[in-house]
Image (cartoon, rainbow, N blue to C red; front, side, top):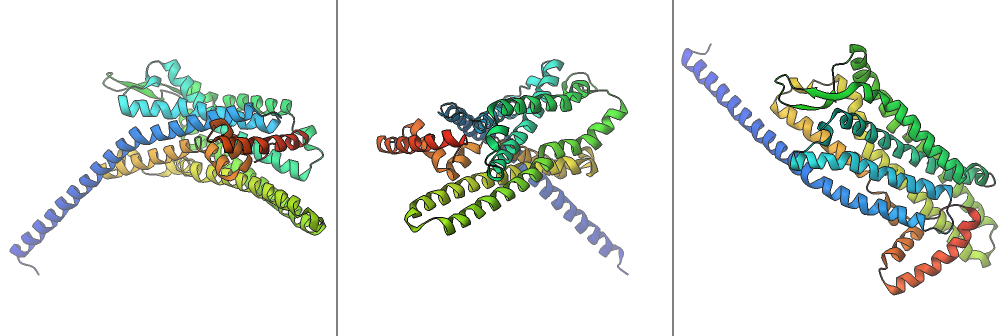
Length: 371
């Protein structure tokens, strides 16, 4: 057995070790707090600048297209939806953490409508991507029927119907979300007000699953199936073309292969970016009800939770800002059209104009946007 002096020394050493550990945790927590603050004051600016420029360029490029198709309409609708999401959710987030002003806290009507708006456009963007991908898959599987099924009028109906449907799905926000007043009555914020216990159960246990299925799970499944069908069909088409095309048509085969490859890569890039950037936040909302409540975490745990949450949010917003750059990276024709609009050089503009003229004739016959 240890004597009294040995025991006292051991206890003092243990207390000292705990003090060092607490000080270390506090230092880490302080660093995370500063990192979160810096992240929310700087990263949104880059996302907003890139997203605003890119989405406006998409709208201008497709609105100038000589052969306006249903696919063009989807591209424009997606860009508009992404812009709405960036400025209804990300921009207020940056204003709040930079200047301390929260628009949703100014009035309970603003609180309800802002939340309803950005929830709706967030889900709408995902389903526009689904529509674009499935239409392209359909154009390969049923090439003679696509012009009948995928018309501009049907595309407009789809966008309008999806908007109305998601407004209805998210309409519970008008009931449950309002101004919440602090116990001391000196401050208020936009959150879940005093509502029935059944609604709280729905909001925290059922709604995360509904939201994840509509925003992430179902779109990702459809995108995987559509892209798989598309890749299989176009690969098979090129394989058959290699067998049937005569040697004198090698240039035609090369052009066809390049076009198929560019289109396939564009689809895969958009789908993969959507999944990687939106899945973390969707998964978080699924497991959140089963995690330790924020109020029960220690100081370090709270800072880790806050940092991870806002990081996942910024990844989600990034998905609404990068489509233009993915199109340019993977699509030759889109990149040429962007060069024309930006007037990089006279030589490039002249060459791209010739390319656009020849490809426009083809696209007018096929009624399909090329990349």
